[in-house]
Image (cartoon, one colour):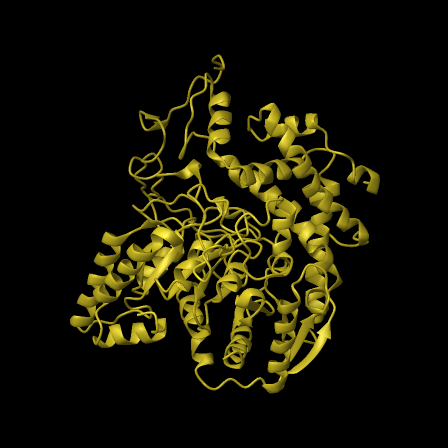
Length: 105
Length: 479
């Protein structure tokens, strides 16, 4: 990735696209407001170009993650009192959502 | 009550000379009188708190063993799950959500016989440095109500600074405990990553988040840290070793003879950009105080710090965009109507999240998207490796590092409306999270407008004892 690509201007279309990927609805005025803000945040990344980082492996976690195992023991959980208790809509002990293929409103 | 430390209170309650119920009632009365203005709390759990206090008094009366936090009221940031008590993250998304379980730290507070008094206000989903991003209105700084308390754990800091409670819990992803501690003139500590369980903490950036204590003084801080630290099999990132208590090491007089302190040049040199001159002056005086206490003090350069903020503002939003994908109106929280599932999800997220949360989700989504991943997220992760390597090399020659906590004292509401200018507040605290190190902010005299200045002591992983001993010396010196 070159510096010029890194400093590329963020377009309103980019912000619209990203909002769709992020499952957020933005209207015209919000796209207008967010575009320069997101651009200035992404501009911070240009500071990284001042360093030669090629020899460093990426770190995702401060001291590396290891798989953690435990015995596979069956535990009883009351889903009605637990996970389902505060769900917006429930039917037959399951989370209920609108039709996946229905019309948008 | 305000004059008593948590250590004293626990002792008096344990001995039966003071009842836990009377202490809890006093705290609730303080909140009732003052919190209309300060707004430190989202939820005050008066009934549950009094029941907990009664149980402690009964134990004392029966001569039973009572825990280290016997009857001490503790406030908890509203992003830690509390069974049967609302947990909102100061977001419309979770308004009214009542978790079916307790976070590990909340269980540990109960096990230590603390009294959980309520849930504190914060920047929405812990994203911010002023608590202005709360969906339920900002928290005011108790020292000057025209100013912010810092953030994101501003409510927890204000609850202690306003003398409601001697102790509170916050979470720190890029400075969210240390910076509000600095702005409110109290002690705030971010432990080594993995030393306190994150089970039940609503995730913001999982590789950076850590829960830690607020208090008025260093010993109280260690008392609460000792109560919450330790391995938890429900958190796969929890360090698999037993916690060794810190507080007993602070009992004897603190000598720093032979201790090597490095003052971080990039954050402390007089005239360094973005820092108030008074803040830098106090940091210089703090390093002089450590020298006078017997430590060996030198300047040290950590060049990677210059880009740590940039790396953080790629990594934290990237992790947040993934973590906050779970808020989609299906399993918990807000649901808005939509003709189909996807429309319902978009409508719920659009109505539930505030602007700063949306900004960060979008930055993270962008940084992780095809074609940009290497330049943004990938490079930030490489910087993280470089920073960790630099700290490791420096800690061969130094025991602890010193810097200011915040570049400035508490600022006025609305003073930093541009997102990036707000982010710059985290300049000195962020490198610590990227490297997983422990660090504490200790109040050290005052700066502009007579407001408190905090200095930061950073230690190598799991060296909280060394860190607290230096903090204690600074506390002595600032008196």
